[in-house]
Length: 112
Length: 115
Image (cartoon, rainbow over all chains, first blue to last red; front, side, top):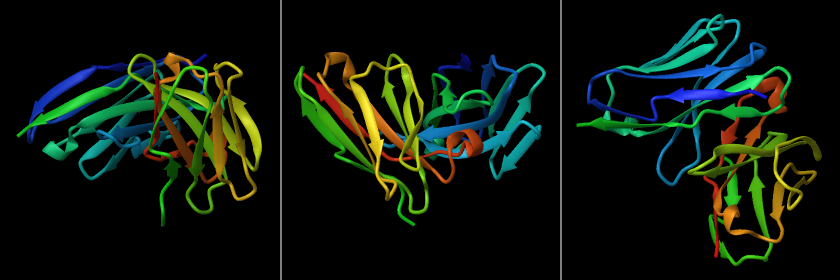
């Protein structure tokens, strides 16, 4: 089955700095790569996603890049703010499966 | 537009009991997926329902079951509860089935504690 590895598990940055979280996957048939943000006591919230026919997607301060050859994709957050502090999960949808496989999560702490 | 609604938000059960959790998807969404979230195992897929049919099932024992009604609302049931079933159970809805769209919108979860 699909295997998704996410790094780092924790990340602490100063307000205004950039944060990068990386995920690797195993199934080359994977075709959909979303990122979720989960705040304390809440469910995961979809913040950005990318499909396999696109290399990069940006939405204001967040961006996702996909390298299908190397089978990895990354979340980039620029000009971080304290409200960005949360746990971020990557996920992968493989063509053969019918469910998302999630990474183990990254706890991002933005220090004011 | 209302989001995904899960009830109850918190519940405490004892070993051997059973529990039923409810999920109302976003209006117009026809797919409901269930995930279990624990600190040790992370987010694990339980099952997905689309138009009242179970489309996919994860690697969980038969004690975990679910169903979907004609109005797309879904319930999941866990029988003969074990301590290891303590978790946050998340419901997610999607306009189409996950295999085609992938976009999931999660509720805030039902936190189950088994004593």
